[in-house]
Length: 401
Ligand SMILES: Cc1cc2nc3c(=O)[nH]c(=O)nc-3n(C[C@H](O)[C@H](O)[C@H](O)COP(=O)(O)OP(=O)(O)OC[C@H]3O[C@@H](n4cnc5c(N)ncnc54)[C@H](O)[C@@H]3O)c2cc1C
Image 1 (cartoon, protein in one colour):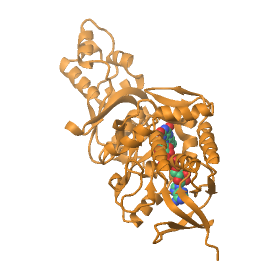
Image 2 (cartoon, protein in one colour):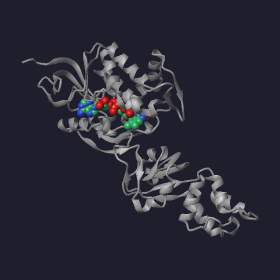
Image 3 (cartoon, helix red, strand yellow):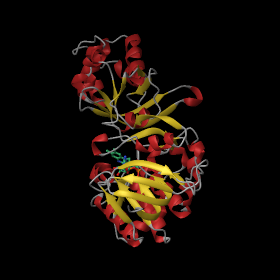
Image 4 (cartoon, protein in one colour):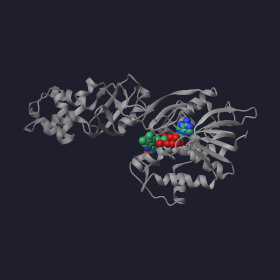
């Protein structure tokens, strides 16, 4: 019987972090194998950023990440920066542009990023096992690993787990990385969908369902005191609840059962704005509100407040205007849940950073075992931060292998 193929490093998960790590380790002379159960390479990179991959953010610091220990990611992020990734893209003449708040996207297609990573892996002579599932992992007395896979036995001195998070299971996302962590007695921070739309019960939402497709600028917040988080971004009404960048961002901080607070007109003081406009104004309130808000939202809002469409602004008592303004500036509502992993962009939680060395991503208890990328309890905001973490943690690990 064959003893199987032998490598210095086996990496499970040929996504963003896995490929980056393989390329770096391979180019340092390590004999690397990349294993992935998906037949098609790097599907999440392909679909990311609407097909243009928001591959980094120029403003990346540890402050745009959520983790039980947010300082953990600092070392890797400062050792491999957005500028380092841009230098890699320049080597392959990949053109890009900045869209919004430091977010960088490919000019042509996210395929450019996959091409760069694949080419870097080729330079490192990385071996591929695509469409390959791992059925069993054991660690030997000499601390090396034996993997039983659908493509036969693989032996490796070191094992890197880069299986990502559970978002979009239809693309091959799985909880396998966390299963491996638990198998080896490592702590896992309870995973949850993040960067995900929020949903409401059908009865509450019926009154707003006509607003599906309406989008507007908002400030959204959740939590209180020191734990209050807020984002100034666009909000999108959907058939089942709320989405858009504002909601995706706040969803990563939202605790089930707690409210979110929305300022639906963050650029104006509505109370004084409306009261000042009152005298001598023959316009309908709907017309005035519709001038500063999407018309459909103004209609729905007044209807929900029992204010008839033909009410004139001049006829509105100040008290009623104050009530209206207060509700628009501080609309509080309790989501019933999230749209789940099928619609989430990332997973929050994962392998507890307390188990890992921040410079190498190696587990402290089991030398030779590493975790990188989204499977680790490091979750970025929307805007290219999650890929920057995948690149940075992949490089930190690849340089240590
Ligand atoms: C729709 C969408 C859009 C996104 N857009 C952006 C964006 O524009 N910018 C940004 O920064 N982030 C974005 N993200 C998040 C980003 O894609 C991830 O954070 C990033 O890909 C994580 O990298 P990773 O290498 O850890 O995991 P992945 O890239 O997900 O790679 C994990 C790999 O492991 C493989 N795998 C899983 N389980 C197993 C198993 N049991 N056996 C073998 N292989 C396995 C998977 O097939 C996959 O190839 C987006 C995510 C989604 C879902």
